Image 1 (cartoon, one colour):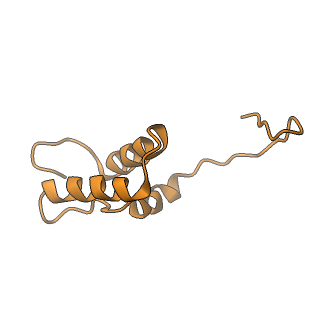
Image 2 (tube, helix red, strand yellow):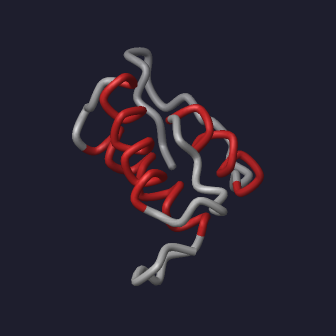
Length: 78
């Protein structure tokens, strides 16, 4: 993938998405970070260069879930 790095394409997409939500980073900032990661790697890589691209990459990995309303104020049980 990247010269000197041992991360898969899915791993990079998941980490970009995780940073976005865990640190409450703006989409524009994540786009810049993803673009930087893509630029650091070799030219023939498939790393997403936007947050939208990372989300699209991970969309096929969605685990089935069922939403259950447990209270009137919007609490959910997972």
